[in-house]
Length: 286
Length: 292
Ligand SMILES: Nc1ncnc2c1ncn2[C@@H]1O[C@H](COP(=O)(O)OP(=O)(O)OP(=O)(O)O)[C@@H](O)[C@H]1O
Ligand SMILES: [Mg+2]
Image 1 (cartoon, helix red, strand yellow):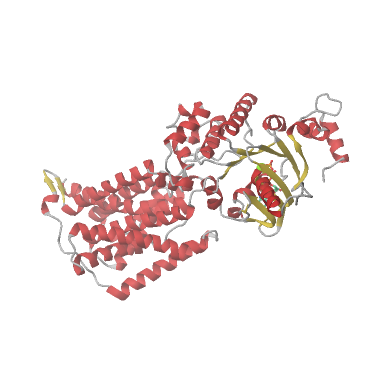
Image 2 (cartoon, rainbow over the protein chains, first blue to last red):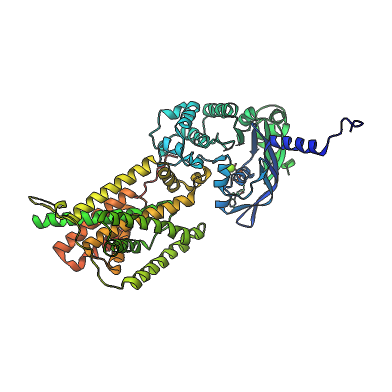
């Protein structure tokens, strides 16, 4: 041993590995997802998320972003989808194809695309549903926390969610997710259909939640510009595959990302639809 | 005038019972979209449970009633566990056919034990419970119905408004996908809605047994009236169920009192057909909030 001071014993190696794995909160290893036994949507997706990161998942319509989130949260099952290959490791534990109940209890909460409030419940009742993983108790402090991040909600606790505006609802559903004390929050297009100023506000709050609560976040977005501002790392999906990945800074400078997601042509001028189309025909990320 | 008042009181009370039991039917429909064709049999089972506890076990009245409610509640959970849970995720029509099968099974079991005879409970309601003032004349049974019914409405109101489990149940009825995404135990919600439905059906069974006597054919026929009631009120409205029940009850007794007794039991179904033709979502059916 003394002759080889730098040689690791197997035990030390194992410890190091465990410590290293500890950092990775979530890992998707080459997963495939099939709906209704025949429709293959994800074709070998791999990604990993470290604790307290915001990881953004970008890609155009139908790329498979929502499907990826559902594979993680277990919501594929009610839609007759399943992970047929590969593994989803959460804190080192295999999670693929478990029930949403079990996955939510482990601290993974998905905030669904298109808001999905409980329309006939009041704002406060909507938030209380977020306590389901711990059978309702306690919830007062958590309500305070949600109102602290989204002060607008405090003024309308008795209002039916069905009558709220899109912006209020987006705050509501993120708040509802927070009520569940998530360790990993999956946000599916929180900017969908919101005015730019609201998008900025909500993204600011997402960043604060990440920093103050230490919540790890996977952020699915079409609005790449905003997403890359708060994310630390990003993946780009296309046709059920990851076609590009890198740190958010690197992605912002990447010419392809600029071209398709940030709306800038290569010359740096404004976006021209004709150019984008021809460029896309020349080069697909496949 | 006396006759009119008598009919009105009778109609409102039986209608209230219809409404209460329909509430259970609506609850199952709202949470799991299942139409429960065994509703009438659940009503009958409640009546027979009470018969067992009161005449065989000779329990004191209140205790017998509580035991009946408890037994019905358990039965609801068992039905969901044993028969419905394996079918979660299957085509809804299978589940509905299953309830038709359950209805036949329960009716058969009751016939096996009690036959088609008409039983009655011993006369147990104190006369003092009735109201007799001027033209208002309310027999003890109807007073008891009113008190129990209102008590249960208040209890359920509090449960669904303030208790977490009540709110989870409403969330599943409202948006099942979103409820799943938050980890709501949907199977527990289904089980609970069957339990509560069986409980209110059983309670109605006891009251109807007091009013009409206990016979499986009569009681399950009354159970079928849940369809006119909920179609009138709107399949997915709890309030609609109560008001639909009141309307059907009153129309029934008035038809029986002023037109003919043979027409009495047909009226609800005539209304069913008319409502389906002119207002298929009922009086209080979901007026979908179209804000989102
Ligand atoms: N339940 C389903 N059954 C069959 N196919 C489905 C189902 N859900 C999604 N798909 C298909 O899977 C593909 C990917 O869908 P997904 O919703 O994951 O895309 P997305 O990246 O989230 O798109 P968007 O940005 O439009 O939300 C689409 O082609 C879609 O038609
Ligand atoms: Mg999507």
